Amino acid sequence: MKKLLLITAMTVFSFAHAQKGTILVLGNVGYYSEKRSDSGSSSTQKTFNFSPKVGYQYNDNWTVGVESSIANSKQTYTIGEVKSNNFSVGGFVRYMKPIGGIFSAYADLGTGYQSSDITQINGGMDPFLFESKGSGFYVGVTPALFVNINKGFGLNFNLGSIGYSTLNYSNARSDTQNFNFSFGQAFSIGISKNF
Image (cartoon, rainbow, N blue to C red):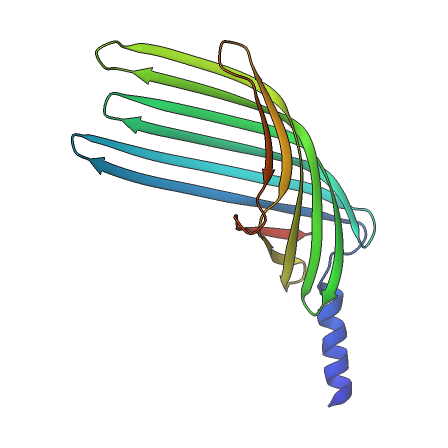
């Protein structure tokens, strides 16, 4: 019985992290919808985002790859709407360490290019159309926990990140520089598979 438990534990541990020479495919998908109705006015907001990653694990702990993100948002008000389209593409490096059983801890360092396109339409007494386009870069570190479900297929859980990003706009809209520290304030679940 002890031998069977030892063999089972070793088998589970061997699948708990990806092996050297494998391809890692993962991503997050998100959707948010909200409707508000106040006295005489109403608003709706819908947001969708998709963030895929593909990497190559060149040894038992290190993975290098490419990442991207697409996010679309639309806010509709009684007299107008605001649409936002955001895109980013870059690279990432991951260090993963098994912590026992089916669990591994990892941290991703990602950096790359990002762009934003915002359109505002006002249909009230003084109608106008305003469009703003910006581009910049981002860099961030995201620690997370990987739970292996079966043969390299698993779930990724993170509780926040730390990052810095810039967006420089081509018109009168103010340029932005953003520092983000969200440990304990954000939560996301992703799916990954090693081939």
